[in-house]
Image (cartoon, rainbow, N blue to C red; front, top):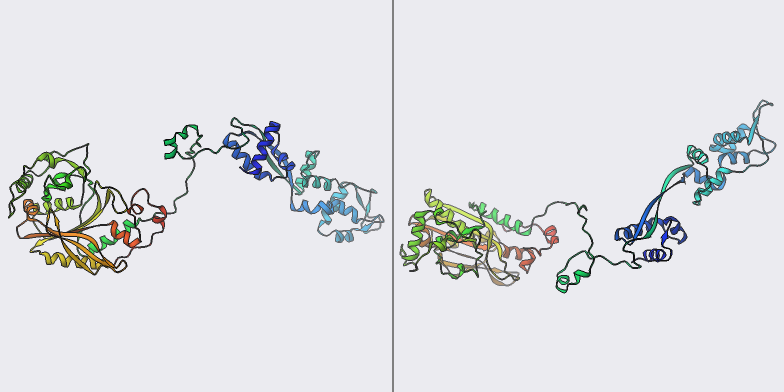
Length: 496
């Protein structure tokens, strides 16, 4: 609470009311415009009640101010006229720019006259002494004392442009409904601690002003993930890849798991790892390609194309379950099936979009993130083609030192983890996963036996964190992201 505010509240406590805030300000040596700011704040808080008062007054112009000491033009004309008289031309020269106005007003007031009996006009006094009423009025206005000024006099000075009218605002103050000697600050936010302790019940909350305007936006900004995604997209396009449509976050288990030759009892299909929908909980099997569905069922139960399958009873109900897709490979399975039905031709596809996993959130894991995937479909592809394509792809990212480690995936064989050496960190880092899609996945789709598909994937978040020096993924993606990061993050240029 400011000293001015506490003094004002103490005055109200003693006197019950303040009739004029401007007089209060003058008597307490305060600036009235500053006091008005305090009064408005107290009015808004309900500590005081106030009634606006308008006071008509006058202010001196620059010309009017110049006459405070020297007197009005007519008084100066009288003073410049000696008792014995003075020629008109000499008087005009003596008065300078005030001559015509001063002489005219002095003659109007019958203070001076002109004697033309000798031929040349001579100015002479008509009265022995005068009272400069204009100067007194101007001095009164300058000191703030406008009482006793007749309207006719004020209008005359206004016409002569010595004063200008102005309206002075002040307040008549009384105690408000929430009057107190000290302001109690209203809470602006309902916090977690208030809810837990119950202290919110004893607090007064500031009312929301829904009509208040926010700061105008200065322009849009690209998130670092969007910048890096744009660079990955340029790399894929430069390598001749076509982007797949990935706008369906909700997928059914058939395309997400079963079509990829992933068994129905696989841990990844458990609710601890996957977000399953409750409404709609499933997609009727009738909407799926029936012949393809039966071939997928057979390959899981009995095997084929050199495989013995998994030897379990494959259930349609499990394949019908809806979920949030766990990888964009579900989109790849749809695209490859469509390619087989339309008549095979070599193709290169890529996708960059969001996927969902039921994982514990920490500094390196989120329940939703972005997956980058590349797929090449052609006849006679081998592991050498996969390694060569990966070297070409990662070389364009600026990652020239690569190593490959054997790995296991349900739908690729052989499978490889991809490592790149970081000169900044001085160690090898895992940057992706790759492999060749198994025949158990491709043949039921209808793709020819001599067709192979190589694929690889990586997250979008990890390279973005490395590029922008972010060590906690929650500072990059999610509700805790700083808006300053969005506004000020630098351009992204990968090694194209």
